[in-house]
Image (cartoon, rainbow, N blue to C red; front, side, top):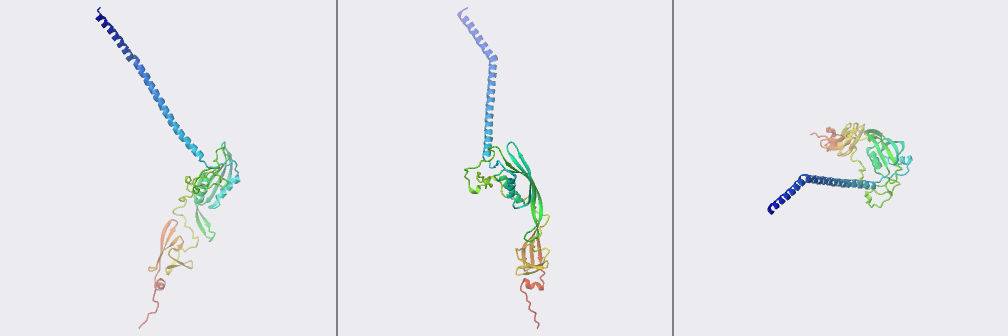
Length: 334
C-alpha cells in the first residue's frame, strides 16, 4: 500500500472515531447533562422564590410587630394593683350626679384571670341621652380601666312635675341597662406607665382622672366627640303634645277681642291676655299682627307638625276705635 493510501485509511479511521464520539456525546451524554442543568436551574429558581417570599413575610411581620409595639407604647389605661367596691361606686357616682332620673347599680362580684382581675356591676336606669352619652364617653376615654358591655337602650317619654310652676312637663329620655367592668391587679407592664416628658399643647390634652394626674397626656384629636351630633331617640313627631307647663296663651282655644297699639288682646280662661309680634304662646309664637285687616296669626309646633293658626277680628263699629282713628262725635242735623 502506498503512502497515500495509508494516509487515507488513517484519516477515515480518525473521522469514524471523531464522528462516533460526537454521535455518542450528542445522543447519550448531552441530554443527561441538559436535564441535570435544567433541574439545577429549577432548584435555583425555587430557592430564589423561597427567599423572596421569606423577605416579603419578614417585611410584613416587621410592620405588624412595629404597629403592635406602637400600640403597646401608646396605651394610656391604668390598671391599679388594688381596687375595692367602694372605689368603683364612687367612680360611678361622680359621673352620674346630673342628667339621670335613676341610676341603679348592683355589684355582681369580682373575677380573677391569669392576667388581671375585675369587678362587674349591673346597671339599670333612666336619663337623658346626652347625659348617658357623656357618661359612656368618660368611662371609655378616662385613664381608669373601665369597660361597658351589653348596653341596651329604649326610648321613653316621662311626665315630670316642674319645680317652679308645679305643672307637668314632657321629658324625652332613654331607659338603659348595661354591665360595667372595673379592672385591677394586672400583670407587670400591662398598665400604662406613669410619668412622661411628652410636650403637647395644653388645649390638646385630655384631663387625667382623679388620683392619676401624673400620667402621660392624651391628644384630644384621637378621641371621639364628647357630645353627640344628634339625639336618635328624640322623635321628629311626638306621640304626645307637650303640656302647657308655663301656662302660656293657647291661641287655638282663645278668642281674639281686640288689636290695640300693634298688640293683640285675647280672652282665655276668663282672662284678657295681651301679646305682641314674636311673643311666645303655647306650642309656638305670634308671627303676624295685621292692624288693617284685623288678622293675628301664630305658628305652632304640634309635636313636630308645624301649623299656622289665624284669628280674624270682626271689625264692626265697636272695634274701630281699637284699630285706628274713628269719628265718635254724633252726627249733626240741619
